[in-house]
Image (cartoon, rainbow, N blue to C red):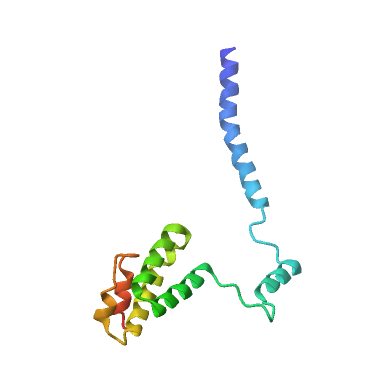
Length: 142
């Protein structure tokens, strides 16, 4: 009896991995990994890319934030814009990936606002987004 159980166990130990590998390979081969290239999908894609003539394009959240921050910097001061940027990053963590580029652009805009006076623009610098504002004030794009 022990020999029979041992023989069945050995057979299962040999056959079971082969069955699992074969069924897994067949399952992966059967799945369609690329979307179907039908006319319906292409027309939907083309329709989503086209904008209605009277309808303005929807801006991405980071573009809306950039516009708002640059307006605040121009109307008020870089300190107000940097405070708003810091608050927005705390409220919307999904926008953190854009924080450095936004702060860098604010630095450049501050130098333009103060007509090339880098020292005045740097006086507003604070450690928002890894000091990207300061780097923006010193960048050659001004």
